[in-house]
Image 1 (tube, rainbow, N blue to C red):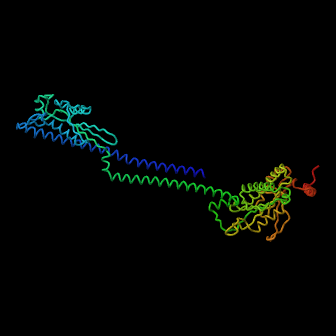
Image 2 (cartoon, rainbow, N blue to C red):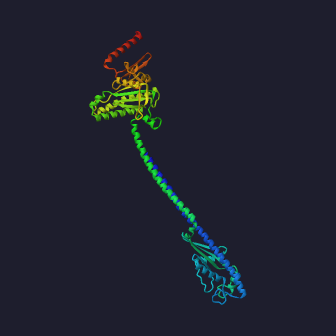
Length: 526
């Protein structure tokens, strides 16, 4: 039982640990998931922001080239040039405007940068290109319909670079192809002269406070989860403590019940603990077969043995007799000194005849076993071991719980029980004596002969005892037994039982019987 409880406790601890681990994993996964979502959202926001800035600059540059530079050229008011600072009435051309605009944007906001770059710069505008920019120019000249995007950074920040194509318009083509400082003079409308690059950097943590409600929810959920884990842990400890206490209580009750079982017949013990029988004062009248045994000259035996030896001998005797009784289904009522009271028919019965037959066979087996024990005890130096007298009677008795509300005893009461004790008293050493009621139920399996009738106080009838000579099959198999049956004759002669005083009388009876048989035969033919 303790082993099963220990396995259950270990299984409970594993389940609690598994639940705690799952909850902790879920709680840990919430911020990770939120951070990943925030990273993806940041990339999307940065890309849209870069695209929007790029479109704004494109629109502004186109407006400047078409609506400003074109009008200035037509009016001859100013001179569009890349070196507008050194030329009188000079104004920046669109490319120069883009470069200057990018410089100012980059200076104002370190997180957002704009750069106009080309692999064909005017003199004095040498702009070193990195790998991304060179690759973007090549890619956009091949397919200017899609911007080139590069995303970099760590889990804590993101940087996005978006490169869009700078296409040559009509005004730009005229200017670049006619300008003596232009490194390329064969531009066509729609050619990709260079790129405009927008770089935006932003730490992810900068946006996390935009999710303050989600963060509050995660914090509350985490607190609840941790509280749940704590409660589960405390509950597991409480359950484990309760299991340990329950195991101890069960072990204690099991030990107590095993001890109590030694004071009760097994049938009664099982019926009480299974709930079939209540521990209350109650009796009923039943037909029982009662067995009573007593040790011959027990007082004299106690004088020859030391108390320790006598106790060991008596305990061994009762143990052997009880084992036989329980094997045959008997209910052991009590031990009275050296006497033993046993009955059949309650709380379990197989019928009056079967109960009587089981009791008889039990008594015969007890006598055989006692003979074997005597041989063992003599070999141990005990001069006169035990010899037992046994009496068996069948009749109605009151059986059940007798006593008070505080203490009761399961036993039988009635004159039939007293008769079993009286039959035991008239039996000889090693003998079993039956009442006629019992003999009538077992006469087909026993060889017995009647003894002189006896009277007993409390029983109005005259009782005829029957001394058991043995079971039918057992007696016939003995070497010194002569047995036979026929029409008008029934012979049973046990040479081991006949004493010296009966030998002559038995011989005369046999001779008279033989003479009578010869007279019936008539004279033999000559």
